[in-house]
Length: 194
Image (tube, rainbow, N blue to C red; front, side):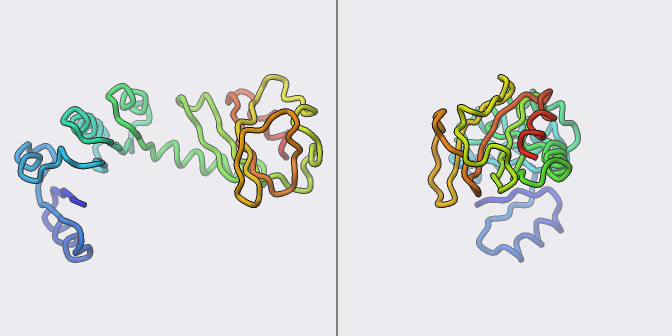
C-alpha cells in the first residue's frame, strides 16, 4: 500500500504510525510520482483529498493509465456524483449521501437494517429484518400486494442462506429482505414494514 500526502507533517505522522505502508510526501498531481512509484500497476487508487474536483480527476486519470479500480471521495458537492460516474470512476463516495442514508434509516421504521439511495436519490434499496409484528409474517410473497411500487429482490435467512424469492416464498421471523422501490413510494414501503 502506498499513501501520497502533500502535507509534510501529516506524511511523517502516517509514516510513524503505519510502518507497513509506503508514505510519500508529495502531490498526486506530480507525474514523476506516478512513474517513480509505478502507481499504474496498482490494483486500486482511492482519492480522498478535501477537493472533489481533484479526487475526480485523479481517480479518472488513474483509470486511464491502467489502474484496475478507482474510488473518489465527493465531500462537498453531491452533484458531482453523476459526473464522477461519467469519468469511469468505479466508486464515487458521497459523504452527503452516506449521511442522509444514515439519518433516514433512523427516522424510518425500526426494522430497517440499512437504506441506500441510487440514481441521485430516485431509487431506494431497503434491507429489512422481518419481526413478529410484520403484517405478512407466515404468508407467501404472492399474497402481498406491492401495487407495483416495489420489488423484493433477495431474501437472506437467519442461517445465512440467500436467494431470489419466488412467489411461493413465505415470510419468516428474522428473515432479511432486500427491497427496491422508487423514492416516491417511501411512505408505502414504510407502512408495509412498520
